[in-house]
Amino acid sequence: MIGIRAISTYIPDEFIDNVAQGRSFGEHQDFIMNKIGSVRLPLKHHSQDTSDLAVKAVDLLRTQHNLSLEQIELIVVVTQNPDGSGLPHTSAVVQSKLEISNSIAAFDISLGCSGYVYGLSVAKGLMQEAGYKNAVLITCDPYSKIIDRHDRVTSLLFGDAATATWLGESPEWIIGSPMLDTDGSGWKSLYVAQNGKLQMNGREIFNFAAVQVPLHINRYLNERRIDPKEVDLFCLHQGSAAIIDAISRRYPDLRERFLKDTTFTGNTVSSSIPILLDKHVMKSDFKRVLLVGFGVGLSWATNLIERKI
Amino acid sequence: MMLDQETLNEIINNIGLPVNSDGIDYTKSFSEVGLDSLDFFSLLSELEERFGITFSEDQYQSLNNLNDVILMVNSQGCD
Image (cartoon, rainbow over all chains, first blue to last red; front, side, top):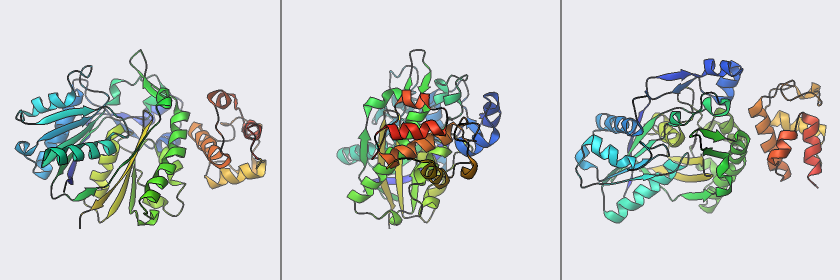
């Protein structure tokens, strides 16, 4: 059985003081702390590329969880901000930098905030098909590459980070069947414009998250006949504190089960869910955790992971 | 169902927006009554959900105060 064995997180040491940045845009400290939810936004060094952050995360997986490079048969990188212009795929660059043997599959997945939920199932499916025993799913989408620091809408939200998830046999966590939705008509809500900078319609993204995500959660649980109270923890993509509040408000009896932790990371795109899992779930006593990713595309994805008994 | 000030007050209280709904001046701007941009987004998404309506980008841009919000919701043919 293929599932999650371990997760490691790499967060760059450098960061933007988001309270100071907010002040420069005329925003009060309370807005930054309570609505955006992030006092720091980690920032990669200008000399680091996406693959460098990815390699850092894999190195941590090796040292923290005793994964050996010889074991890895598959590398998947979830990113929409790859090395260079995306050709070649960043996963190949990662394989080269790690000096892993050529007997390895490697590819990228072009998805944003729903990417980790997708990536778990894509990697698991290929591993089962190809008979792989160990794979590493990497998330690394440094939005600092595409942020216009004069743009108040996007500057206050995003932080750089990378995660590496070890997928393999004898897992700690079993991956369920995903529910995956797309609404491409909303692509202009969040996209990179011709000037190479991120453009976001904040209201459209907020509204999409506040309305569609609870519907998606409900449909996922209903179709699988799972009572929401049977979910120990709701691990949602950390778009902003206000978005998590807007979604969790739909579940008044379960609000305390919705994780909200962006204080020192910001919105790290596809890394936000595995960062939460690494920090709050892997060593916990939780048994059932719902993962919900949503964002650019528009794309949204839900899956349940369960601790292996 | 029409949206009136009483219902709007109830919604504002339910979603915990940082304004005193007893003393709101519905003609003042959103920032003047204490709503920031994300509070405003929260309010509109709640109204869309509750009344089954959608605010277009043009409609959203034309909203200046809570009276505008009431008029806009009621103009969308809620029954």
